Each structure stands twice: as structure tokens, then as C-alpha cells.
Image (cartoon, rainbow, N blue to C red; front, side):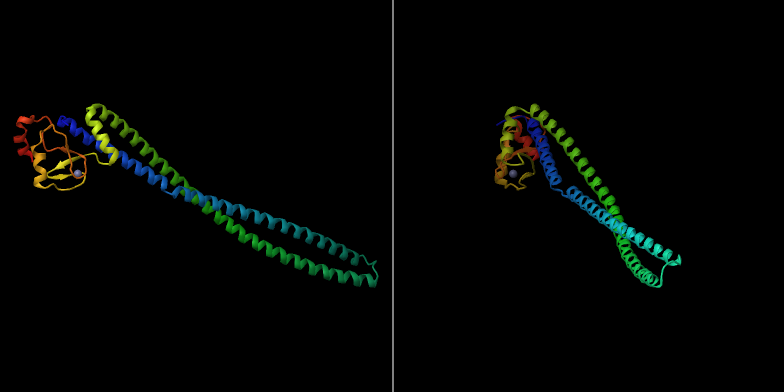
Length: 260
Ligand SMILES: [Zn+2]
């Protein structure tokens, strides 16, 4: 196949765009695989659950404390009534003895209730401290989640913008390069990521294999508008060390000697 070397070189631009598109796809894949936002979301959820469970435990304790306080109130009222009765001077000796014994039993009951209440208050205090810590951790975790999501959105927006640019560059290039050359490129590109590469000295920049002088001879002898292929990797070899609008076949060999 023959094509103007200037057009052949545009395949390198097309290749650069395709390489960029491949890198953008990889970046997108890595972004999708990044578990940072999901991990942060799970942590926030776990901390919220923990806070909700602590809040429920505290509400249960408040109910128990309230019940004890109402019972203490009843005991106190009963003891006050007993003391009023004793002070009235109208109770007989036997009744006074009964009242005294009841007062002692009420006092014991009150102490026991107050001990229970104290224990519940201490547990409540410990749960409050845990709840406060969980809330502080939730704020931090939410902050980390917001940052992770913002970073992901920024990265995604950048990838999408760069992809859109690269895709329109690709369309512009395929329009400006002769169809036959684009078709050849696309055929190779369907098989392998690098479809066009520079020939630098004796080396193909795609497979990086240095060609032997024997393999180089036909490449050197080829007309400047001849489309060359790498024997090793199959890509289109672009001679960038030659002037793009160089001489045609009849004088090309002298030119080639100058540049290779
Ligand atoms: Zn090669």
C-alpha cells in the first residue's frame, strides 16, 4: 500500500489518541474498583446504627429510672404518713410498734431502690459517653465519606471530559486521514493495542525489537510513500526521521541514505 508519508504520520496521532482512550478506560476501571467510598459509607452506616442502639438503650434506662423514682416517691409518702400517725399521739402502743417496724422496712426499701437507681444512672452515664464518642466518630466518618465521594466525582468528571475530547479528536483524525490508511489501521487495532509505531533507527517502538541489518535493508530500500509493516508485531511502521513530502521512488534511496 502507498500513502503520503505525511498521512502515514497522522496514524501516530491516531495511535496516541487510542492509547489515551485505553488509559482513560483503565482509569475508569480503577475508579470503579476503588472501594474507598463504599467503605466510608459502610462505616457511617455502622456508626449510625451504633448511635441508634445506644439511644434506645438509654431510653430503656430512663424508663427504668423513672419507674424507680415513682416507687421511691410512694415509699416516702407512706413513711411520711406513718410518721404523721406516730406524731398524732392517738396511736396505741401496739400500733406504734407496728408503725416503727414499717418505717424501718420502708427505709430499707428506699435505700435499696436508691442503690438500684444509682447503678442505673452510672450505666446511663457510661452509655452517654459512648454515644457522644459514636457521634463524634460519625461526624469524622461522614466527612471522610463526603471527601471520598467528591474525589470520585471529580475523577469521573475529568475522565469523562478527557474521553469526550479524545473521541472527537479521533473522529477528526479519521476524517482527515485517507480511508484506506484508516481501514488498515483499524484492522490492526482490532487485534492489538498498538497499530502504528515509529521506526527509530532500527527499532520498532511498538515491539521494541531492534531489526537486523538484513531486515532493515528492504525497509531502507522502500519508497518513501510505501506503507511499511513491522515483521515482528504487525504494526504500521512510521518513518519519522524522513521529510514527509520527500522525493518519490526514483530519488528516495538517496534520501533514505541520508536519514537512516
Ligand atoms: Zn514491531
